Length: 360
Ligand code: ATP
Ligand code: MG
Image 1: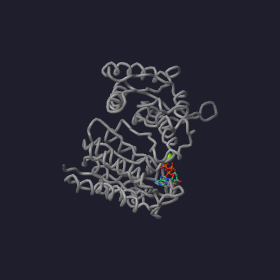
Image 2: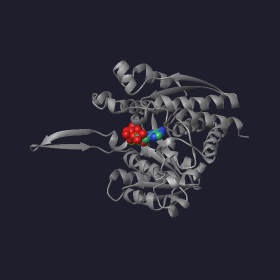
Image 3: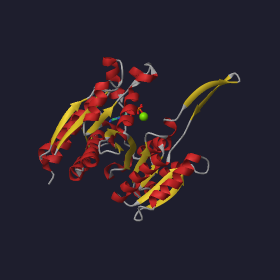
Image 4: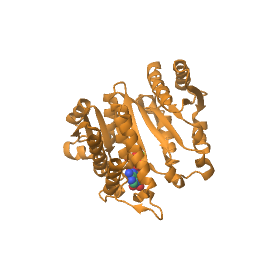
């Protein structure tokens, strides 16, 4: 298979972890006879430094020309003071918008080897944490009209929250299709007791559910969902929700696994082209030291193989190799424990490559 992959290394630990993901992809190419072309794309803080904007036109075009985008991380305190209209994160919003990436998928899963890392009680963790948060990504309050005005001598600000049936319907389909490949259970999260957008959300989700009789669909209010995620995460298989609720709940869901360096994500749209990135940020505090954990980045490359290129077997092999490396007692600094072997960022990449090569 021939594919073009746009690589955004970005800022902070970005270049270090992306290099490890590329190592793993090259190993997959070799083993399975694929041919990937890697296109380096400059975006984020480094693009502000070089071009005065976080997403130069050429960079966006390179993403649009590729079969998928693999992103490490952008931003950092260095650019805190820049004009809000060119902030590093703006590059991501623009790419999501331009590629029409309306669905963000984030697995919240605890590796059996790292159960002790969860901040939750052992009795809760034992029941299992393995679910997928499907978050609507380009609608809702983050994209609604914003206004700050002076009313009767004091400042007043407002943010509009809006959803159309079409926007809800397409993300609902993503959720039900995802559930079909998993354990067939969707929990839709809203605030239908208060919000009109949520009432429409609920109505449309249930209409779509009719097309998936093999998948169960229940509703949960967002405040309750926030509670249930820490009380009994084993009840979730696929959790689907709107943009802002999803932003908050997906961070909560990843925290209960205790290891943000290990979690990948996929942003998908109508076309097969998507953007794949670890959930953590650019970690400027540890940049340039070769101590970052590249596993979230490497698993993101795995998701890319699965969702963008339908290479399920190759993705599974990467995931199995990561599990094997953890079982063999290898750790990066962020998840280091007594009696295990600590590896640097590049050593972890090498170990995963070696394991992919030797696994039967
Ligand atoms: P952003 O705003 O971009 O999400 P953030 O400020 O929320 O960034 P991160 O950059 O994700 O935060 O970092 C949070 C903490 O987790 C930092 O202490 C960082 O060093 C650590 N961290 C993040 N990613 C990794 C990783 N891959 N390996 C090890 N530690 C990490
Ligand atoms: Mg963050």
